[in-house]
Length: 371
Ligand SMILES: NC(=O)c1ccc[n+]([C@@H]2O[C@H](COP(=O)([O-])OP(=O)(O)OC[C@H]3O[C@@H](n4cnc5c(N)ncnc54)[C@H](O)[C@@H]3O)[C@@H](O)[C@H]2O)c1
Ligand SMILES: [Zn+2]
Image 1 (cartoon, rainbow, N blue to C red):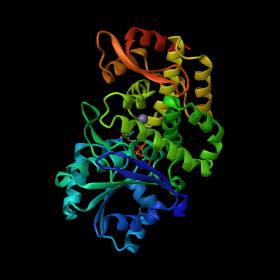
Image 2 (image 1 turned 135 degrees about the vertical axis):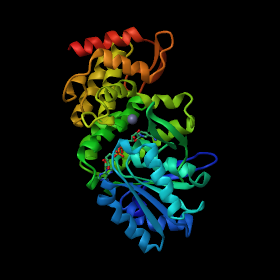
Image 3 (image 1 turned 30 degrees about the vertical axis):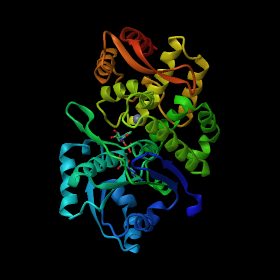
Image 4 (image 1 turned 90 degrees about the vertical axis):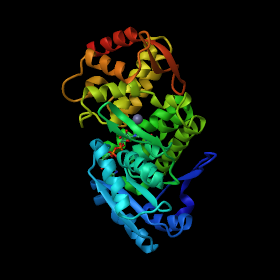
């Protein structure tokens, strides 16, 4: 099966590594790690759901390769990205007597990846780590780029570090246990890469959507192309000065909606991004930048993927204009009434606009909420 792996090279000058996308990578991890890192020991960080659904596949492969490991299991969910669980993981790694030449394996979704990556970056002044992302969002987004972190009372992801993994193994068989809703949410980030600067990729997604959702061969290609897209932005702009901010397409509106719904299961991140991307398109149409048929096409594609595309699609009480505007103002620094947004001139033609008038955003959202 090895010949069928997609390999996305991340050509960072000081720390190049590869992302593998393929089947049975979890079973094969033991051999692959042994080949690359020799007799190192491993601290596997995972959450309860992934431990139950996927961990035996990993430990069987490590056992077969004769590799030693300890498992640190944390509760699932965003609340685990906290100081408390950072300590749990760091002390778990120390208690396991892992040394600097040993490695951490982040085995889970983005929550585990962000937490374990941060723990690796500070334990013994920096341990190497391997990302084994088990959700679609983690495979196409959070495991690529080297950002790690936890949440603070002052905001999400404010305590963190840039720490690149040594290897990323994105196994396609994790989808046998990933909840369908999580898959759809991750798909919103896949679509995002097409909308940012790759119309051909968006066209291809339109054509292949059913196959991607039905676990056909297009799924591996969709994931590998998404990783390559993110890698492109990361390489151009590793520490996020400019270009990388295009990856925030749909995220200003999305974060405001997540905040307004209390980061609850009413709206998970990718769903907020789906609605946020549609709003970014519609706002761009309103500003006379984007043809309205492009906004319609994006909405239709996300709807066919089973994603929410309007604020009205969020179950429960609709967030008020005041709540949304307060969240937007908090998320983005307002400088003299101006906000930074990712706007678009059409599918694949997004750009960073620094001087967006906060009142224009307010008027746009007021119209949307009145519909
Ligand atoms: N570092 C970055 O660049 C970056 C980028 C985007 C998002 N993120 C972060 O990623 C996090 C979201 O990641 P996520 O959507 O993967 O959430 P998550 O890690 O909470 O995973 C979603 C749910 O799916 C479960 N799960 C994961 N894989 C599974 C599998 N194969 N089988 C069964 N259940 C499985 C998890 O236990 C969890 O309940 C957020 O904290 C976000 O801030 C980071
Ligand atoms: Zn996102």
